[in-house]
Amino acid sequence: MTRDTSQWRFETKSVHAGYSPEPTTHAVAVPLYQTVAYAFDSAQHGADLFDLKVAGNIYTRIMNPTQAVPGACRA
Image (tube, rainbow, N blue to C red; front, side, top):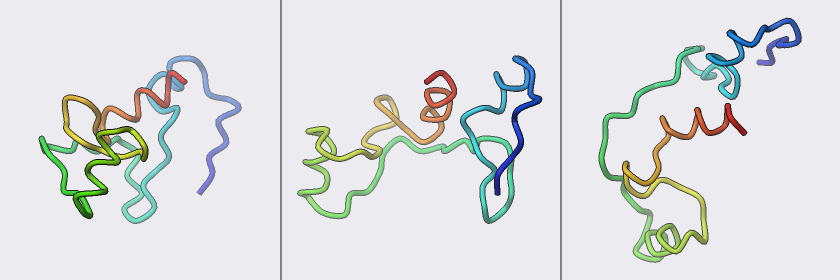
């Protein structure tokens, strides 16, 4: 689903830019993930995440899906 954002003003972009509606539920608000830790596929996967060899969520204070959206808006 694509959105025509060409007519959006600064205020609208400040709130909605960088996030696309979730395809299953069509939610337009960023979900809040209330977790502090994430499972890894394997010990090697966890090691690769902590070594920053692969992108992914490690620990909430470092990075999480909710924090990723404001970063995408500013990028």
